[in-house]
Image (cartoon, rainbow, N blue to C red; front, side, top):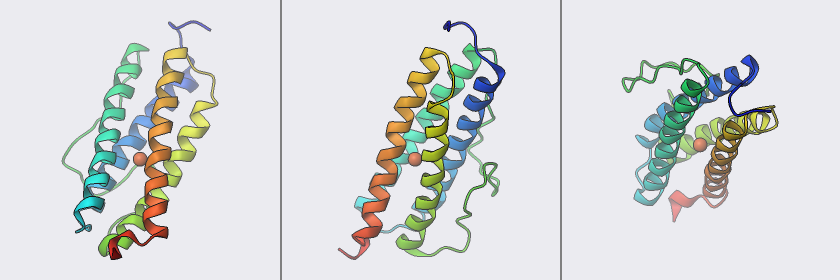
Amino acid sequence: MTNQSISQDALDTLISLAQLDIDDSHAYRQAIEHVKEEPIRSRLNEFRADHERHIQTLSQMIRKYGGEPPEYSLDFKGYFLTGYTALRGITGTEGALKAMHTNETMTVSRYDAAVHQEMPEDAHALISRNLADERLHLAYITTALDDRLWEK
Ligand SMILES: [Fe+2]
């Protein structure tokens, strides 16, 4: 396996992960609007920033291997491309966290599948680092829901 070549399957996976991170970033933007508690907002803002970093680093990796990264527009048009749970109609912190729990569960499972795929070494390392971030996001949201953190 060389660092200079990539299969079409592996490149498609990088592109679909970038799209997933775009959707995650938009979903966090929506979710955060429903959260009043500052400590929770600030964690969710950190997670959104992680997703934006993933979008940038995945896009660089996709270009390096000759692919075209998905478009990332900040003006969110109200739909998701990766089968997201819509945040439309949710209210309050609990609803926002539940929606993001569903979304982050899917994100972890998509990254976990990608980390087992054949991939150039640098792409594999990037996916592993991102997966570690995603596991932290999901762990925080799971604990926040279990502890009903917004009531404290
Ligand atoms: Fe995440």
